[in-house]
Length: 271
Image (cartoon, rainbow, N blue to C red; front, side, top):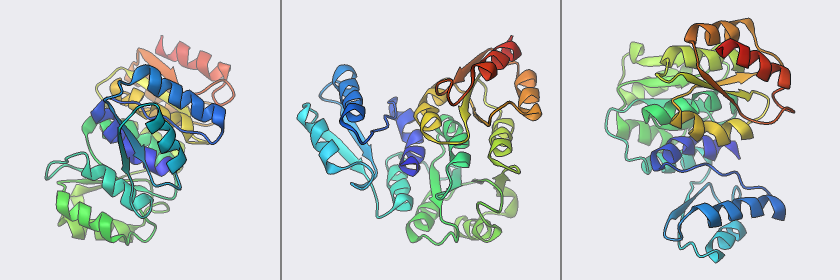
């Protein structure tokens, strides 16, 4: 499931480790197990994000059977508390800005995942009503100097924004909402606001989450924003890519999700 992976993107970047998505079939699971066996020393640590409902105990047992003894499962009662548990493992310094995203919708969270990882800002998931005791406790503990709310008020309400400001004892100007009229414009708004120092951009479909989720660590490593696209490039996306003078673009996913025509158009833009 996407929530655990999104919250885990910051931890994965810190640990210099990839995010591997585990499937339900033997063949899908076998690919992940083969990767671990080939690329990870047996003394290394395998982190499992989420409870047994997300990644079963049977899969954990298969990892253990390969010879890995250091298996750490980070999970809470639900996706919100799991994000808090992941944040606890980041060793976040007091005052570090916090990023709040909806726990019910993936696009905005995916768009900010690489930026959060680069800046080492924890990602916390928020419910629609914002009432989660553990999330509130974590915000109060970190005492962030700023809180970034990703998405419009249709995703995270103004009431949640006010509650977050009160919990963190922040003035209104230190609660920064970044959003657009849809997931694609929010993605672009994030890229424009944070203006990362790299000269690469990563592009993923906004219609599902696996490709962008798995690619978030790659994007962070390359100091690249993740731009979500639909079936074609929008004018404001073309303007951004032209003005940013990118020298490299990485497409997440095959031609079934990002067409050959879009790939060709992107290649022309960065030239």
